[in-house]
Image (cartoon, rainbow over all chains, first blue to last red; front, side):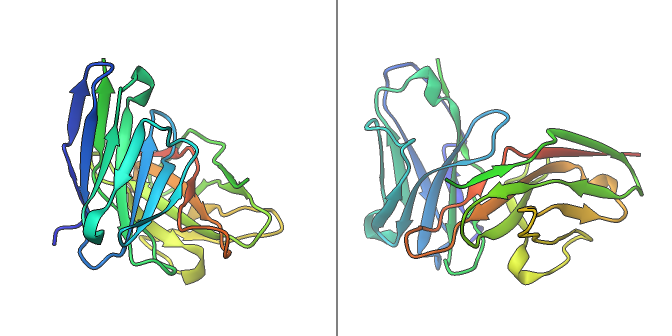
Length: 113
Length: 112
């Protein structure tokens, strides 16, 4: 287990297209998080899973965004009908919960042209 | 609402000089505070957390609830400390999940 993996590393898409990102957390971590980071800003919370249950969603997560974590393992984040404002780094993190911090993935950089 | 501010976007110091990265927060309850660091071309990683009262790579941070601050300090900066530093808050309570609120970050540049 080499940590949190995200795929792809980079994605360039045309406006209006759908994109899907994948995150593989550390295997024993039951909590998984998605964050978005734009230039000059810190990461902003999008959504959080405990096992397969999506327990919290940010208001940033519009109707065009959907996340899943089937079987409580890997997670996918889909953005439908992408807009230029969706261009950002999408970060995934996992944790054991409690008082532990996160382990972050390297992120997927999305560019919408 | 919870908020984290880091007033300096960029902080430059000379090697061997003391460094202090400022972090202030707003939260009505009792938060958990963390510092995360991102070195060039590496992923974001946890540096330290206030509940551990630990010193990592010579860095320490003390939670001051009266001033709602969690400043990161190191007495003698090293060139390898050059990185982006993010202060983060996790609200504590039954009504909250496990998500962090991050500050905008401070880029520390340690000059030779």
